[in-house]
Length: 426
Image 1 (spheres, one colour):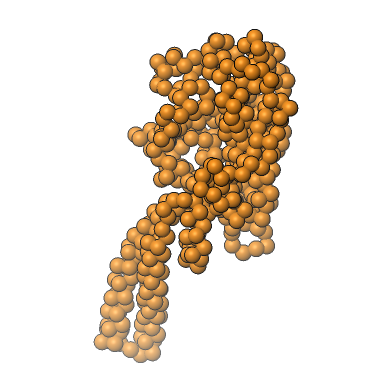
Image 2 (cartoon, one colour):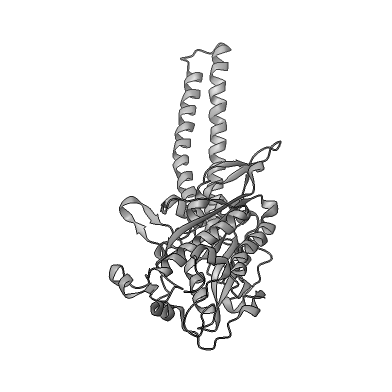
């Protein structure tokens, strides 16, 4: 959530930065409500001061010899009651305005950082670097991963549709083991890099979804258990970030690094007709997520480290990829700066997104009231939160099935995964 003080003090800057996102964001209604709320607050404070003055004056008058039941004291008491009654009418008006202001603030995305490139769409995303060209497969007849998976008997779509519906998949035998192996491999790598593993709840309340920015914007993309006011986790970012919601941390405890495996559930609203086959765009998929809570002065540096942690998985698996920087028109709703990692899928001849690494600055922390206190300093500050996929497991499997596919339709297991699989070939 954006800081109302920032909007109030720099309305033109905020409006211009929001405009670079390409959406129709108008902060004027918010400014008008804020003005009304502050006027009411000023009036209430004046009345409260008058009420306090009367409350102090009455005993002084009585002590000075006024009759407690005399007209002068009676008039003061009536004035005091009148002032309190007026204060009582202002307080609910203030609360109503505050609720409307917060409601509007929740609909505004984060401001892109100064270093985020300005652009209109993914076509304007600059490429940062490529890695692993030497590992690009030379086999010219590579089957799409879903066809190969079915031929190998490790992937079944029809039975998954029978159990659920389209955009679900069943992994069988070595396919299921490869999924588990990837999850364990990813966790082991990130734990060795300094992340503390968490197994969070997979069902999340509305307050948690709101704190990280999934609500109200992305309600249609999420699955909800309406009877319990619980949502299926769209990504581990949500439950892990909310572990610290409403807390004030010690600055000495920062940075905090967590990694977590969770299944993820998304409706993929608006994406029908895209990636209908295979492991790329499912309603249910597994992911290992990296989440950071850091001091504001280090968050830019921490994003680069996070990106490196995510890249290390693909490097260890020797999967070709590229890094792109998302422009203002393509960046996520609650992100200030994002790098995407795209892995090479030879069957389509394209790099496909496998990880997003983002810095949210204090946007999520303000929503979730996650603060820290520095010893020797007054007050508290909002932490900066970051997260990234390390990696999306199904898309990693798809990349392995295609990049390591051999001419006889077997698949070499990446050397780094062989200890987890106990075999060299699928």
